[in-house]
Image (cartoon, rainbow, N blue to C red; front, side):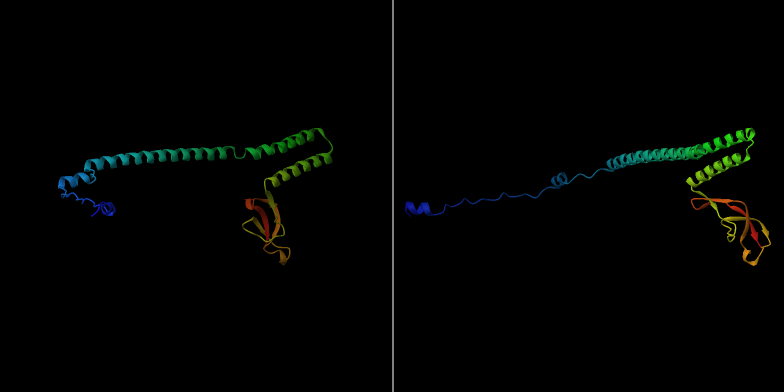
Length: 189
């Protein structure tokens, strides 16, 4: 071959020999595997986890106990001072009654005293309406055990009044569609 032909011919690559791999020994395999924790290590880890969960449980129990105490205190405060607003709003009515009682001793004019008492009554009824307290209409209506308390039975003046309320000696009242006090009524028999 000429020099030119040698240049064109592809160069021969040297043959690579792969190294011979020897089988791994048992010791080498054991060293490569992840180590399994020993029984003592597992027990220690479980005890640590148990202690952590125990502390969380105690914290939650203490938190719940504080919540219960706080809620109980709030309820007691509501019961103790719940009527405070209602009583404060009634004080002007009491003041008006006191002024009326004082004027009874000084005044001879019965008409003006009657007018003053009517004003106080109207003021009080208006206050009750603001608190959603409404009277139960009874006279002439059918007797309803949910609204009325029969104090006596009286012979009905005519057949149409049987089982109906003839008279209402004591008015009943409702608050927000709940009976506050049953009306004491006389029922026709």
